[in-house]
Every structure is written in structure tokens, then in C-alpha cells.
Image 1 (cartoon, rainbow, N blue to C red):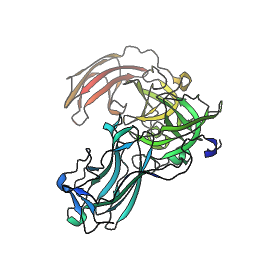
Image 2: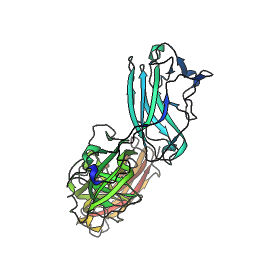
Image 3: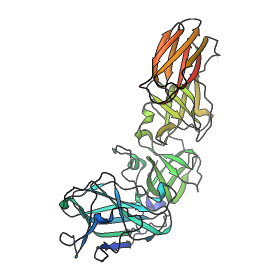
Length: 447
């Protein structure tokens, strides 16, 4: 697949130009002991932790001294300014001290209580250093406030964070041309993109459509897929699309958002082959939004809630989700499952796209009666008793909500006793199995 160039896209903002200033302050004007350009309504740094600095300023007569020695951050914000959805703002400032500082934006968006995702912290030093960070607005408002978030300064006066010469602009240049692996490849512990909050242009083949957008992929293997949040355009699988938008971390899912350009270059292309991976590998960042396939995976939980089910090929469990295609699996049946790998609500999940993405490898025969089983108390807190009346040697197995075996034993029946005092509270599945026969019951452990 050819890689994108700006010449093939009709970007409205592709023409380079001078940066438009939306806020600038040398922190020179003060009233009542506080800087006039700051102290917006979202400031929650204690008032006695904000003071004037007239000896160590970067330029002019003054800087502002900010003090917060706690590990929890506090906000120091600008006065309200007008900001526009889809616009990337460049925040430049000078900082000195012994704490940490980062930038953010309040624009009243519907998520995050109106706040954008913060940029990474910068460690201040005892030398004045200029810092540049960018942030993307998602909501038009005249009450936007740019945020300087501070924490972990030294407890001595010399360790306070000093802030000076703040300049916030709109860049009128076009997006940065990148590949999907450029966006996705990361070593960050939280999996965040190195291009987060950056406007980019990229391209890929559509592998799946739904969930408020679509998945595109550039090649095969790790780091090659990304989800596009787009409620306006509806491409078809196999379309090659070129688009421009903003890289965003949405609850730890890297996605493209706020598209500024979209174009279908060609249709009917071969969809990249699914990467065959273990169910354990399906819980890792490199395959986020990549078309993957889990093989010979047993359904350990057919109803994990919210249309989800759990499979495990022996390496570890992973969710499957009905976001793109609903399916009713069978407990203990063995499946091959194909779909893009998604991340939401702190869980990795494979998203089958259609019936052909779910292959039944081994079905479960009709169960024969193997006896009776009952448990008590309900709920169990420290002890669980299992009484069985089985016709022959039977395996008992207790699994947590993720399908992980937390206890098992072999019994001929009678009374079994289990210490559950160290188990986490929740709903468990107790199974009695003999060959291909199986009966189950739910066990509730409470604290």
C-alpha cells in the first residue's frame, strides 16, 4: 500500500502560516497579590501557595511562584479564553524549580468532567527551561482555561516551581504525515502514543466498521492498526482511506479523533491477514486495534456480562465482545475467533465482525446426569462446603469471573471443605466434571 502524501488530501488547513496567539503573559501585572492573566475559575491551588517572584524571574520584573509539595496535582489556570473544537494549541512556557509541571485544558467537553487529557509531567530544574506541549480542544467555548498542573516540589523555598513567559498559539500548518506504526509504537507503561494530542495525516485499509467508527490497518503484525472515532463517514471493509485527525488517548485506547480530512482512495482491497496470537498475547498493547485470531480457545464463560464472553487457549483468558457482531457461545466449546483487538473499561477484547469470524472447533455433547451438588453458606466468607452425590470419580473446579482456576480437587462424593478467606470477593463458578459430562453452580464470596 502506498503511503500518504499531503498532495493527495484536500486539507483545509494545509497551507502554512503564522501562528495565531490566543494567550500571552509575562506575568507582569498583579492585583491584590495575584497575577491578572491567571487565577481562572478552575484554579484549585491554594491561594497562599501562589506568590510573586521578583528576584529570579526569567525576564521582565516578575514571575509567579507556585508551591505544591504533595503528590496529588493542583491546577493554576489562565483567565477564560475562546477555544475552538478540533484546534491544536501549542503551549510554551519557561519553568524553574524542583517539582513537576504539565499542561492541560478545560473546554467543557462531555467527557472527563470537561477536561482534556493532561500532557506528561516535566521535571523542573534549577535552570530556566522552555517547555513546549500541545493540546487539542474538543468543544467550542468562550470559557476555555489552559491549565498548569503542578506537584512534588521541594519543601524548601528554593524548590518552589517558578513559571514565566507563557505563550499559547494556534499553529496554522498542516498535520504531520505519519504511518500507523508511527502512531502506535510505544514504550510508555500505559501504552500512550508518542504522538498523543498531535494532528496527523495517515492511511490504511479498513478492516472493520462499527462502534462509532472503524478500524484501519497498515500492513500486518503488531502496531499496525488503529481505531478511528468517526460518526460522519462510513467506509466499507477493504476501502483504502486517507485521513487527517488528532491522536487521542481515550481511557487508554489510542485512537484518531476530530477528523479534518477524509478520502476513500480505492475500494475492494484485500483486508490484511489476521495475526494469529495466543489469548495471553491478546491482552497486550502491540496488537491494539490490529486484526487478530485466537485458535483452539475454550469458552470458559459464555456470559461475562454486557454481551461479553471469555475464551482461553491455555495461555490466559481474553474477552470477546458483541460490539460488532452478537453471538451466543457454549460453555466449554472450543473456538477460533477473529476480529480487531479493542480496549475499553480496562479490558482487552476481540471483536468478531460476522459469523465467519467464529469457527466452532469442538462442540460440547449433551450432558448426562452425573449426580447432584450443593454448596453453603451463601454467601461464603471464610469457608465453603461442597456436598456431592456423584456416580463415580468427579473433578471439582472453582473458577473466578475471568475463567481462572482458583481451586480443584478430585472426589467420589460426600463433603468437601474449602478455605476461601484469601479469595477476592465476587461471583465464582463451581463445576463438577466427569469426562465430557459437567454440572455447574454459582458461588458468591463476600467480605
